[in-house]
Length: 130
Image (tube, rainbow, N blue to C red):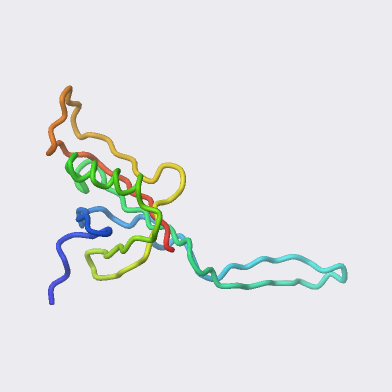
């Protein structure tokens, strides 16, 4: 079976050319190190249960999203409170939330006084696993 042509977030299609840029900047084991009063090294290790960042990013020459789709994504970010299903174009699936702060950055490819629904934007989408 061929992989899907797009990423999906809930019911929204996202361009598959949005690249997961921080995929290898997180590990599940969390380690804390300190020395005891005797000088021995104490290492505490636990496994993170959630919170892995998934930043999907476009650049100037690919990863564009039409204004109408961006408006739908923005509306979802402003109304969702429950985890959302994210399926990447390669078939991997995650339950995610929008990241705190600025979960969506978008810049139009060209400046338009009256932007049309099909005006392309370069998008960065910041999510975290639930």
